[in-house]
Length: 290
Image 1 (cartoon, rainbow, N blue to C red):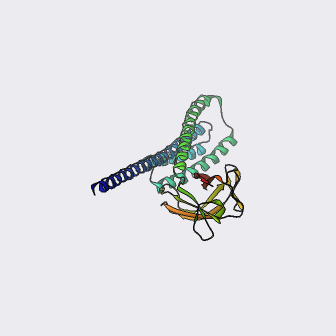
Image 2 (image 1 turned 180 degrees about the vertical axis):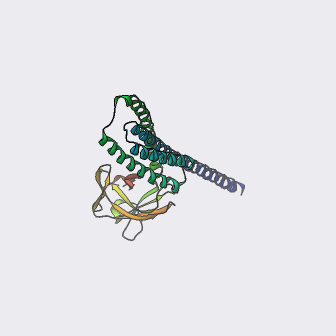
Image 3 (image 1 turned 90 degrees about the vertical axis):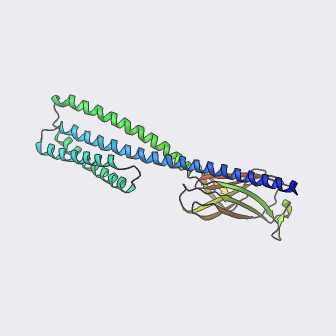
């Protein structure tokens, strides 16, 4: 009796350990994605702060280019408003979506107002030699700020790519079975009337929810696709699919079953199953049949 219980207990313990390891790795991956998303928000906020500072400097530069007191006063007011918005932005937390959205809209308005004043100042064309040194100094500061914004944009793009990769779907437990005319599992290709491909879309809380079209591609030993009558885009080209199915994805694990009606002679050898979604190959596996 003990010889039966001990292996069973060992199996249970190993299963619990494996589950704990998987859960730990999944939690660590989610924590990393959350940190990446938080860092991305911080970079976005810093980029906005740099733009506000750059616009304030541009107002300062324009005031050195004209002798029109009325326009100088208007530029001063707009510069003060820009600096006020900058101070508001500095006090806002990067994850305060409502305030960040409001200040982004304000930033777009500041940009439009600044553009209109640039046109006015350029049309006056009243620059003189005595102010060129000041103009060069401010231009150097603007160049430095622009370089900082460019660096932040590059880092932001890199983080965006990492977040997008983390949000990709993943297909596991891929199986290909043969079904005979009695809807039973067949062992040989000659008895197959259908090919049944089943798989699991894993849980991914970072992926967006909604309807997803899943494409299944079966390739025979010769590398040809068992056609399902259509194509889908993948890496700047169109590939044939064998089956497709639309599912509603909520971020939770979901099982998918697809069937291909046998309409041609099947040769023995290795068959490859590939799963695609959202323009990505999310899983593949090969099978051998006689």
